[in-house]
Length: 455
Picture (cartoon, rainbow, N blue to C red):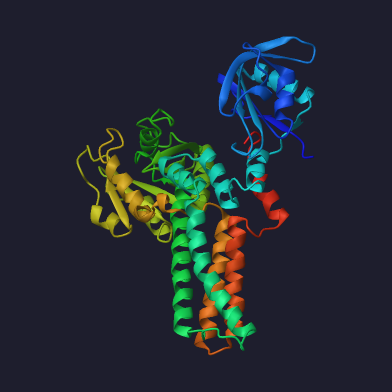
């Protein structure tokens, strides 16, 4: 018999409530050893989706806290098993004591993601939906939340299922045509087969493009704020952070180290790094900061290049523009509240997107958000339509697309239909792995080890 598991399902921090969750065949009997309801009704006597107020006690009979017991009966629970949730006051010590009482009563500690893994094993959700649950927990913005919510409700899985259905129909026809030539099986129409393969290619290509567009929302971007001293980099950092994150003075060279903060801009998490002003300096401390800034530029996924509109372009400005020719970047002509002296056309000629902004007042921030959306091509990102979440899913989708392209090439070269069948079946296998219908135990282990304990 599979063990009954338990874990704290709320965050490891003080809060209004703390929840200890049990799942398994003995969830009710173990819960009854800890919980005593004020009504006198045992947990095993409660109907599903009902709650009861009571108290929790440890093995020695010591009262731990007021507790609410919530019961979910199999199979109508998250895991598909009998589930009990015990909610106590949200102090860390109290919640841990409650968990220990449950473990002492016979439960086993849950592993990372074990509740969701049981939901997968019991057919409550597929592997793609399970990964979306983790995406929902880790969502750092609205678009990431919408994508994860759509995935957890099966939108991505339904898109994959639609591709599989059409390919499975073609694979079945190909197999029947090859295996039963004496039967009255309709001849395989190569044009119809080619059209089905191309439709699969188009849908998979769309999914893969959505993965690249959505990655910024899910994972965020390593973003460097760069420019020469006193261009307004730290003021921009503070504007985007919403607080005094970087020291701002009228003296050049104030920022000597890399100051970091994560912010949301246009719904995209940016892991900002405010770097030292780029210039030649004899100051050994500032020189270290300048070298650190240059190293950050080499690995940045996005650069916000800041220029002082009240000053003419200098050597460091030109060097920065040349260095960013092949780096995703947005030019910010800052200090628009001051008289203009910069050659704006020279700046715009070096960048795909240029924004005029006053970091001191915030005027122009909406234009920066618009430029970010355009440079990342996120306007075509529609998370409610279902998107790929993980590199595992991306790899399976790419493998399916590669198989279909090989199948199309086989048709173009006039190879036998057996060769095409192998390609179509390869695509079907990859799509089945994506949703977890055909996947190794090792892959399943790898997926759920990324989860937090208690989910």
